[in-house]
Length: 487
Ligand SMILES: [Ca+2]
Ligand SMILES: [Ca+2]
Ligand SMILES: [Ca+2]
Ligand SMILES: [Zn+2]
Ligand SMILES: [Zn+2]
Picture 1: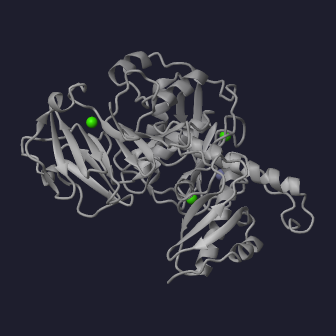
Picture 2: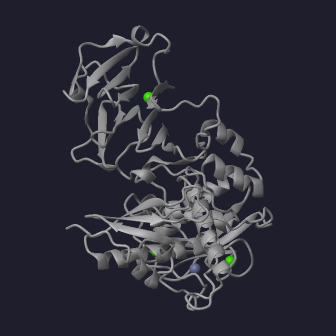
Picture 3: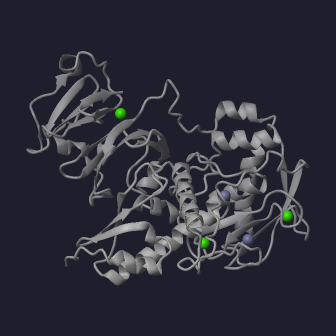
């Protein structure tokens, strides 16, 4: 069904939804609503924002209403957005200046949120930003500044597990918490002791909905847990949402991972924007991921509490993983690919995104962009714009994403491309969109794959013959602005 172009729609919407009247025009196409969105503080003024919507207007309205509510409450809870003043009387008497400054605050908070999560800071409510907002996470703010002095002064802390609603037997839950505390005590000189008596520095409990501390839980998903900073009474206490699907092995939300995170808050640590850190606010753990404090977590907790004397020897054996730093002169990439307008740089579990309109380069986890589909430590990747496909290579396997979702039946073997069986992996792939072919680099050889005929063109050439200026083997390759860059 086709929607008529309609300028009156946004009028109707603006009566119903606070935020929507920022939108200057809405155009309905068969399945999408293209929304011209006037953003007072963005560098991308009057951009179109595309919302996927049902093919019926009422569901689009309610969809948009839900989005607006989600956006406002998310930014209020986690980014210090002030509630809108004089909301009811807005149409009648609200100061226009107040309205403008509220809107610009909203955009600024959204940009801050996008930066925190490694998204292009457009200040616009796009689909990608929504996906991040819907991710299960910790209930604490991402921007609240904790002083370095927010810490316990004693070297042994007591904890107890209180109340009912434990997700498993007390013994098993206790074992998980003991393992979680151990992660922090291995790197700092603090000791943690379990107590069964009433008083303990840190009380750990599971709650449902409103549990009388001003921060109600929200059922399955959304907020997973929260904690209180070091201090007397409720200080240092940790609450878990009892309605989550908590897991002690690898399904659902890992109780261990969330406990380590919340215990970090109980020790006084704030959220980290490092996607490799345990203190990252969103749930970021693939099933069977080996949980470890990252370099950032260790640095932050040691800054407050000092270093465990055994840490140095432990550090030599098993150093905390460092999130790769884009400024590191020795950094090399596993793979580089274009994706839509952006260039993606892959390294280990992470990827950087370079959007042509923003100078900043955001970092995120591969798994947060494509959960359970694209593996870490890739060999190569490229985008086939014509077919709207992105291909990822690792070892003898490759994966195909069409319109950003994994195609069925993958991974498949790279022999599909016509590689002989001696080729066990590719180093890099470079796609030529106009000529419709892709060059694969393997060791000192390069192969030309015809995307239209779906086969290799002849035998491989030596890289030094084809591109004498490029040293082989190649790490990663991408076409960019018509020129090829190899890395
Ligand atoms: Ca929840
Ligand atoms: Ca307490
Ligand atoms: Ca590579
Ligand atoms: Zn948190
Ligand atoms: Zn609570």
